[in-house]
Length: 320
Image 1 (spheres, rainbow, N blue to C red):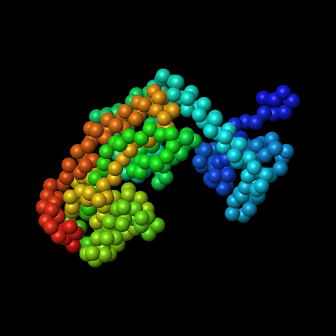
Image 2: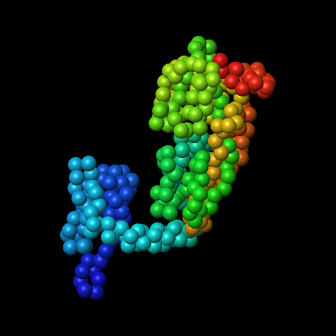
Image 3: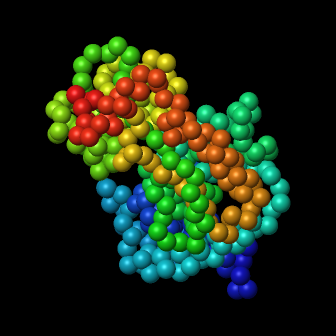
């Protein structure tokens, strides 16, 4: 397509790739973010640069791409173009009455496992028919305004943005170990994740009661596998660990590290029929599994520990 002067008009997709390279610092990282190959990103970036006289908008350095002065001058108008294009896309999606297509959900590691186990049509609460649910696990909430995801199920809701946010429920967690496993070693997160509430809680227990760390792993599912194998004890979400017959619960749910979860969606997309259907499904899942999520389906052996921890001054004695 050309403008009235016969020049090729600007393609929004090229501007989108320009912004992705600005934000991610390399062709490869931008490609991962957009689901495109590195050569495709390179070609589209070159096409965008050609629209502005062919001058490079980035300095090509060994460590990646760095925006130069010519490129920096284009960031603000490109972002304005992005905001307008995404607003149109959200409103187009909101007018679609059909229950079909893909709904992309941004999730953390605990929510990813919970939702994934209910994706089968045989689940008591199956996903809406005709819709493909796409779960994208990350430690950061996706930018819903930029359509990195259609909605999010997260532990910490954003504090700003044109978003609809609703509380879903709480994931209880407790300390588990393999049945009959000896020793008091712990399985926990890595040092880089020492700020996580579960990691801080384990460190406090170690300071007060002694003990050692047998394994540090960067996600809960690796920790789950290690605890099931007998590597040590550790904090796990009750909804998953209570269903593992080889595990026993050593404590009742630990209230100070319970994880409250929320569903988050851009207000424009909340009106889209397929997005609304997935939000309703997520709400129904949390409602129908509320007891298991709260740790109500406890291993019976935890009863003694629960009574012990209820005694004044005995907060950590069951862990010694």
